Length: 491
Image (cartoon, rainbow, N blue to C red; front, side, top):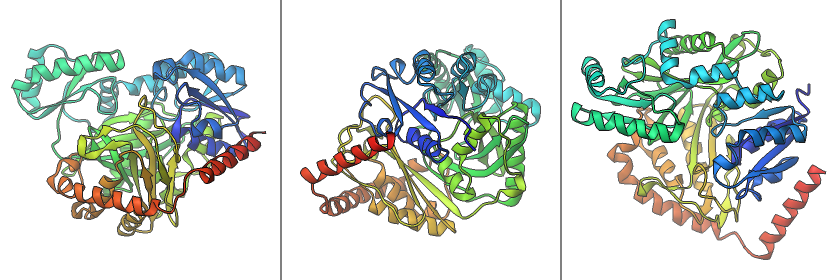
């Protein structure tokens, strides 16, 4: 069944290509948009049509709501898929699409707005009986009130931006002497990043695990979960390694957490794909937030369930009911995703944009690579540093770790620094192998000690493998042939 004739993808890079792949399998034409620095990007070549959207800065291009909707209407696209990041969780954009008669592939604008407020969503979940962390129930700016709340729930605490995401504006406070500076700093960052200075306080868990549940819900109110993912390995509150299912999950815990996740979807009147995020500590779990969009790590859920989440998003947006019930969904094996960022892990994860001189992605059984890069690609400094997602699947967790190690050893990216050596170190780490992870895992000394050695080994291995490449006329000829093929496919 063809749900739409044409879809515009309001994003770039690997996620734009991921959505376009689903559209191609569904025989749906795709429209790409691109900024001035992305005019030669792979997602632009992959799409059936492509239109310039503005200058390099996101505010002039990928965040330009009016321009994007205008392109959708002029190109004849009936729907817009926002991917993740940029406008994916912007309720104003979802509302604009509806007002202009363009289908937004995601939840309703009112749901995005309600769940986009960490304070509001926390109040909603507390009222519904979903466990939440102790803390303030509303925004806070008065330091005396903040001191009183912090004393009641006990240090350490964390100050968060209500409208925030990606760890932006978070401040950990270990004692009262740090509190005032943390609140003013968090408010300043929140205002700059989100246009909303509202912050709140929660009890800070020292070494929790970050576990989330993928949900799907259609317009008829039928909702299912697609089991759990663990995203505990992070840097600066942003995920680096995800796996599905969680290594600590038991049938009893899964039943309790999945029931809570579905309750979150129900009380928020949710439709389409979303993820309910929890913190887990000492047998207890607490609602953290709901991501009202497709997650970066949706890939590993697709691996263990066999369900194409982007296809389901498109079908739900077209008014279709879910074609399965909860009992039809089961877990098959184990999957891990490593985010490959253009960053230097030994230099506080400093971004390292630049030109990729040599590139070869891994393959073989159980390996999936989602990327928008290639040999000769110039990574712009204007956007997020993630350049690829390396995913592995196997029947058991020990086997998938071995498979991931094999895949990392095949991956060649030369010309820039990446997180590949860090991922190799993590996969070899005894604590990770045992499943003993938490959100401060990368701060543990045993990771840092091994990283320098793995970095040296990885670079030497890449150089050896890259010796099989020949540049010059051969590369130019291959590139030209690929471009001709893509143009023919468009025609």
